[in-house]
Length: 208
Image (cartoon, rainbow, N blue to C red; front, side, top):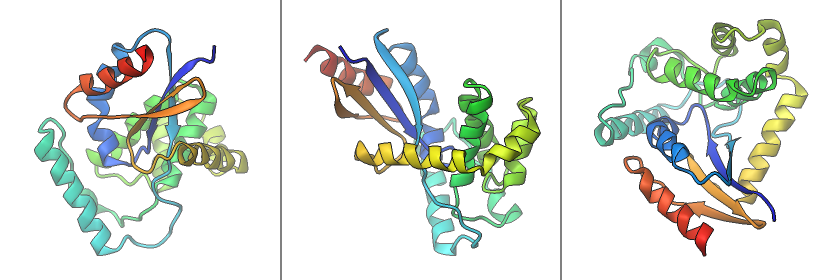
């Protein structure tokens, strides 16, 4: 029998992924033991040196405001928009997760959390390699190795492969949960306030 895998598809600079963190933790603590959890990077926005259009900035600000309304415990630092030159570019942050993961698998989650904290609470820009290097160094990763791997061909290829798998599973939004069971992929409904929504769907699929 093939193993059953629950994929968590995310982007470290996706604000709705940050909104989902509390419920996602609750889901993981209540999953049946036979389910393997695998984190997968979806890649929200490719590399870009261009300033983010004002219209896009407004759309993202509105998403932040919506999250604060739906989840009052999530607070954003809107100084980001005046302290930085925003770019619609999340691939660098995705590659940072891969580079950190390569040094220590535990750092997949740890650097994701560090990127989210830097972006949403400290008004720092994770689209900049310099910010990502600072975050990796704070995690006591080898900074020289991290800097070499951040934009290495192997890292870029790994990100492409994870994005390809996401598309194969027909994932087009983040965060997403997909259950792989007996070679089939099943999208799992999520709720930003209630872990049981996802858990009930998973339970139905396992007992079908």
